[in-house]
Amino acid sequence: MGYPAMTPGDGKVNGYLLSFADSTLLKALDDLEDYQPNKPTSKNLYNRHYIEVYELTGSSLGWAWVYLMTSEKIYQLGGILLDGWWSGCSLPAN
Image (tube, rainbow, N blue to C red; front, top):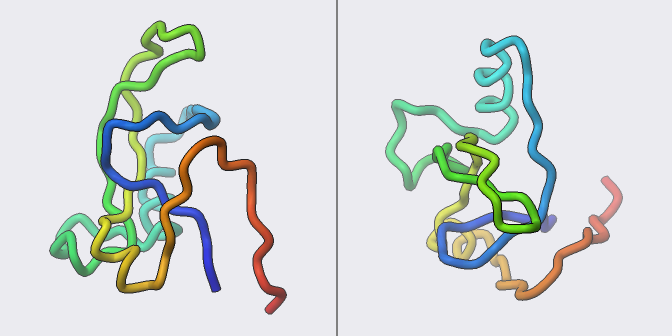
């Protein structure tokens, strides 16, 4: 089964910035993304990073947590590089 993954790099990713009043929700998001801060980077599915995010006009919105997958993990899972505007994908039915 394939799924989208964002990786470290200089490219731009268009998406939505979500904000939550309850900071304990970050733990639930970590669980969803299979991220455990005490595990080595190579053992997590995604790793959490704090990056600056921007409006489409280029103005900074501030800083936000994102989950990034390493290139090694993508290769290990048989992923492929998509370039340009990603608008979704069809996943096989379970």
